[in-house]
Length: 190
Image (cartoon, rainbow, N blue to C red; front, side, top):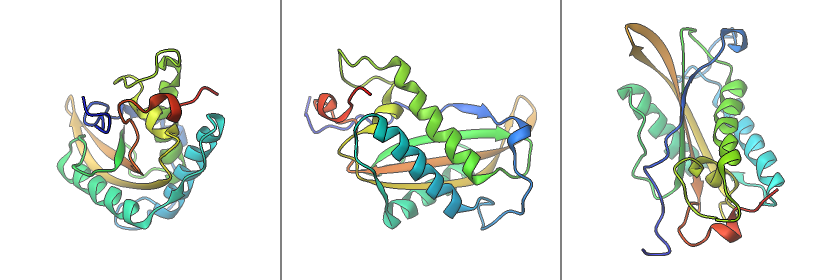
């Protein structure tokens, strides 16, 4: 296997329902119905907090990755699917289903990043490498990923006869993480 090969298309975000008690009731902002500035800044802060725990440097927001991630989030929301893009960037996906018409941007960002990071409990530092159960976590803390871009969009999804608002989250990372053969130097124990 090529040591530069990226593991992609295996690890998708988990679908969850946000408890109604944490849904915001403020007016929606932008065409996505999500305050993207708050969303992106919160996602960046949450990533950097987790990265600090694993001795990885802070990431910075990238306008090009933000645009790419937003375009893909819009696609996912418009088509009601959860699948990876063809981007060369690293990518984590997440979707939250709720009957509420809006969601608090900071809450959505924190939930997505925390959901990805929580895979840390399944990561085996004594046998470092890729696993579908930990691929989100390893991308979040991947030391060589220095740029982050995130997007979020609202769509609709019918599940077992109930229509939900589906809030899709896409975060993209550059350089991409989860590179075969590079886990020991990029995913460090806290």
